Image (tube, rainbow, N blue to C red; front, top):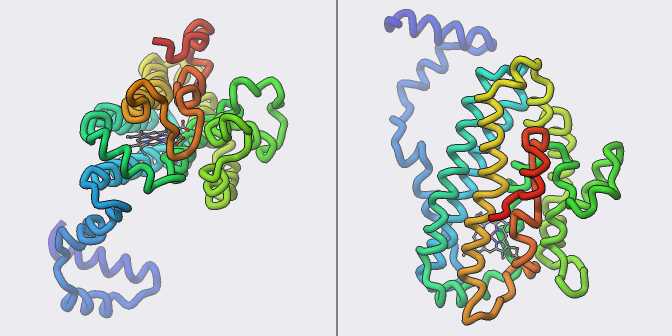
Length: 305
Ligand code: HEM
């Protein structure tokens, strides 16, 4: 595009929204050049590591959680693009799923920053200052699941028979798999971790569920024409997604929890107060986003090593 063509295009753009282009062009003469630090918001980003102790490894712990939340945001961005695509076909879907698989793969591969990169002694000290906060309270983690599949798939497998497909979202919400991680192991009462999470995000998650009920990834996949739905590359990508989100990441996370929380042969309580040795294992949770893509045997043996 020549300079004249570019100027003409800009003028047309402002006129199309009934704005005077001269004012905007004059404004450009005075505007400061954009810099890397302003654009990336580096100062703000680097000011977000607010630790509760002076133990240096706590900063690593906080930053790695922040990095993970940013990856979660990238995953959600892909899932929203898929959900809102007006004419979805595998040519758009496969590269987006491949992106999600790369993000989750990167998180799984780098989890040794947590499992190997902190001193157990430091962790055991600073974790007391975090109670009752827990990664269990990550709203984006739940949103990803809700964007990926139908709510029925997130109902606790042990309670699926008590739920009908036609039940309301509110009723299904009372039987979600993650509630088992928010109950006191002995009394069955809700933990403070779960109550605070529900207080802050309960409504938002309900709204999110209603929004994605008809446009989550599973719905979008099953609505494809048969010739696309049976495409081997697409099926492979979706199975990878299920395996990466519902087996591989949960397993590296679970093994890390074991390293820090089982010390000298004793199992310690987690900051969120769950019965984590049972709850965190993907074999127990049995979350499967696309059950139609797995055989009965594969489902029966989900995450069994
Ligand atoms: C030393 C590192 C870590 C340990 C020991 C650990 C431990 C735990 C435990 C025991 C739980 C169960 C809930 C509870 O009782 O607190 C949990 C849940 C969770 N944590 Fe971590 N965690 C670690 C790092 C991370 C990181 C880096 C993330 C990234 C955001 C994360 C995200 C989550 C999520 C999403 C859950 C809920 C999982 C589910 O409901 O299936 N955790 N964690």
